[in-house]
Image 1 (cartoon, rainbow, N blue to C red):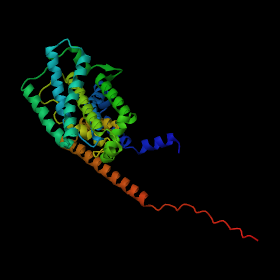
Image 2: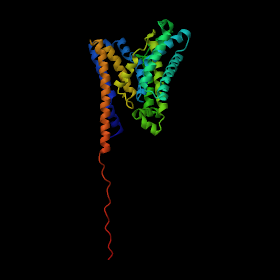
Image 3: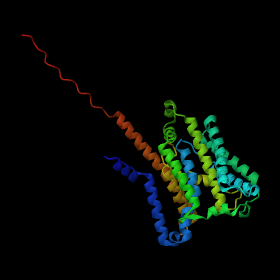
Image 4: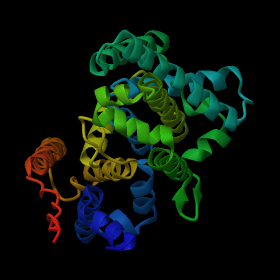
Length: 349
């Protein structure tokens, strides 16, 4: 079988393709119900713009999950960074936009570093650590912001224009999300560090025995997740212009859900950022399309929950099937090596 045929076969059987088909079908059905959903200028813009922040978070979440961890603090990191951006502009109104984006990346990366240090050196499960820092970061945010609110008048128009500006009908924030997706996806797929993250998630004990730098890779995954959450916070400030203490609340659950729905195994070692990105788009599209289809808010949440449960169950079924196949291969009898036929001994006359 040629490499092209194998690649095509892999794509056809991939989870990413299945989720993409569901997404396309949802868009088509909703557009048939109301063509403004896709074919109006606002409909097209919102379809691309709405998933941008969740997509960035899902990409960072994927890097953490494939190492068999999870980061529940990204929503609080997003909100805290968004508010910090507003405060930066109230203090330094002439600050360049590039400097603000860099500050958001660094600030979020530092918060992610705290998570990574506690997980890798404290040897405490990431679920417990990041659940704690979720509340700690949110508490700092609430204490800092209080009843105060950053408004659009506190930030320069050039920065706020990023929330509405488009390039060839594609929103700038969507382009930023796609650049992040391409960069992280390329690293995870081709770089040694990315492949080691998959190896660590597949079998942490074997990764240690093999001599992989597990502490460094897990730590870098949390730093990446925090930095991308900080970037998402900058994008949040640019898009909405108004930042209160509720910014980013509960979005961490959507980020985990997007990754899982997109085929990232919650038990680590399996999945791609491309699938997580499609999952993020699917989640935001569900939230905007189901009301048009006449589905109540309760059932919208139920549909998302059902998708997450189905993805987790499917992962377990596929993992169990693969384990049985490997066990059968190990137990299968091997053909004995061929024995040389005895040579006829010459009898002297």
